View 1 (cartoon, rainbow, N blue to C red):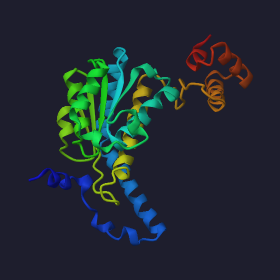
View 2: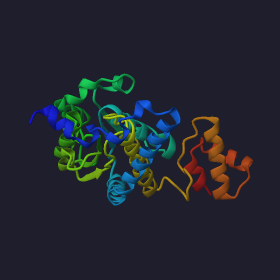
View 3: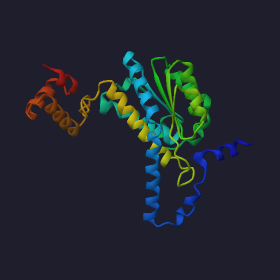
View 4: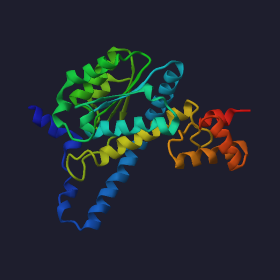
Length: 276
């Protein structure tokens, strides 16, 4: 069996025959069909809720014990979603940017312009982990819809060899990636409405899984109070106003008092919340 045949057998590459008429649908019917598949993607994530829970608790415990980093690795849509999840942890939860890292097939240029060939280089994935000097303190999240992208497999394999805790997110059962990670997370979304376009249901499932997993990790690490972002960074006027509202709620003070407290703490909300 040739490599091309093996790829064609993947669920993410198969043709959804029920959507063979997609180009003939009205715009409204096309949108309805796409939305139905997006809803199915959420269901796929819910089937992995137990594994996401295990991974969130284990990651939070590992990060609590030291100065480890969250390292996201992958190619194409998958790593773009990983980068989005990671970079938002700093403004939302005050997670130190120094404790984030990314292994991107094709390097940063691939975030803005597709570098499709870069995903086939497994050695480059290993080298990316080596360049970061990953250790047992680190967490590596490897993401690939097909579960077999060479670059991403290289990332996961090198991370495991370095002793890092590893998570693998893929949309295909029995993915090779799952043999390389501590926490295999299957998001089985099946064939896409637009065949092979994993930016659709597969990407949606990955985004949702990352959203819920990282939010719970940050909550377990004490970066949420109630349902408020108690470590949110005040990088603009909207977020300064949010800090004021959060402080008013938890300290029972007026907005003017909250603003004074925050100014005195240089807009460090955790300090203002805990100040006498």
